[in-house]
Length: 347
Image (cartoon, rainbow, N blue to C red; front, top):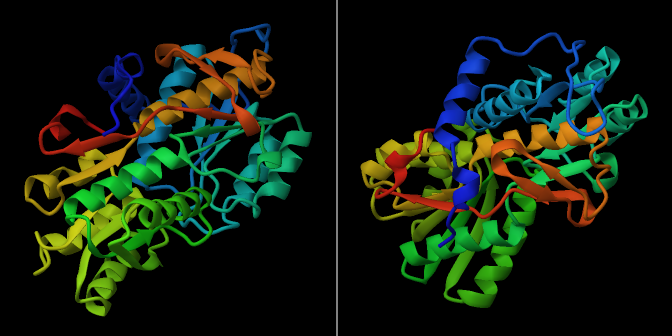
């Protein structure tokens, strides 16, 4: 089981409460504002815009609250913009507008690895620093990627959980987000490899896509159970998907007989863990992910780092981080939530 880094979890509850409160009171200033920062960038443009896959997504509400908290700490200005639906090209106009407004940095969770690259290249040519988080673009389209955990670690923890829950054999399915989601596809590929290498008695019968939409994911869950009457488990590596699947299972005849795991937030999944629909699931802390992404953006804007491998920067309460290969920064290991610990978390 993966566990949290104690130093990186210090102050999380207070930080989350502060970040959410800042969002609720509209802490973000106009994107034309700028603030002082660290390094040699006292006059740096610290107007930072967060662009999630889509608005109204609880996962991104939490991650962006972490970003708002960090930006408040280092004296920048925060804004959140985004589409209502997570389609491949829906973020393009928001990138273009932010660049035209002269923001210092964009923090983006990409809906597609290629579809927004031209817009990001235009923004970077206008001296906008681009940090991706959660879901990456092609590496050449951004300055840094803040990765929630290693793809191998995320894949393995989900495979280990479903294998334990179904007794190591039987049919399973995967309920993913969109078919173009970079992170989802990387995890699924590695889950397939892990299943083949370590769990030959588990058969992955199908991967379906709920497009990070609650109703679509709910319907896909129902369809899976109808199509595969012998299905023993579902893995949903997306917070929207796992919550929708749990909602379906919780009132169906399959509750307690079809296992469900994946990546979810404690607040979404608490009722389903407590009523026995779900035994255990995993995730990193999305507020920490947004917090780290904001500090990375500050470090780029102020010139503290350039995004070269080996660069290091300070990220507030999370401590020091180093840039790895392909200009990527790793937040840490996933954490497993279950009935024994879920009430210790509030996000």
